[in-house]
Image (tube, rainbow, N blue to C red; front, top):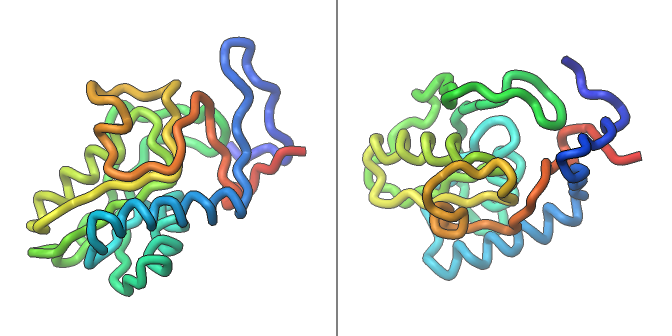
Amino acid sequence: MTPSPRPPAPHADRPAPLYLTWNDIGAATQALAKQVTADGVPQAVVGIVRGGMVPAVWLAHRLKIRDVRTIEVTRTTEEGINATKTPLPTVRNPASLGDLTDLDVLLVDDIAGSGATLAHTADLLRDLGPVRVRTAVLAVNRANWAREADPERAIDYLASLNDTWIVFPWEGQHEH
C-alpha cells in the first residue's frame, strides 16, 4: 500500500495523527542529546532501520560520536497511518551490528508504540556483549503502549509522550 498524498480522515475512535516538522525533530534530538550527555556519552549509536536512522544520525552528530550502526527490526507490515503490525518484531541482518563487546551503546528509534521493537532490539544488543545498552526515542504513542512498565521507566531517554499516531517529516505524509 502506498501512502496517500493526503492524510486519511481520523477514525471516530482515534485522535487525529500528529504531524511533526523538521524543527520538531531538531528540538527533540537536542533534548535527547542533553539527557544522554547527563549519563555519559556512549561509544556507539545503533539506529533501528528505517525510522530510527534519522534521529540516530542526528544524535550521533550532536554527541560527536562517529560509530553509528544499524539494525533492521520491523513490526509494521505496510506503510501508512495505523498500519497493521506483526505479532513479534522481525529482525533482518543482525550481523550488520558488528562487534559490540565492551561498548556503551545507545539504541535509537523514532517511535515506540507498543514498546516491543525497542525492547526486543535492546535484548538482541545485550546478547552481543556491550557493557551498557541505553534506549532513546523521539516519541511514544501511549495509545499503543503494551509493556508492563510505563514508557518513562522502560525507555531511558524520550523526547515526547503522545496519545496518537505520529507522522515524521521523512515519511512523506504531510498535512494539507
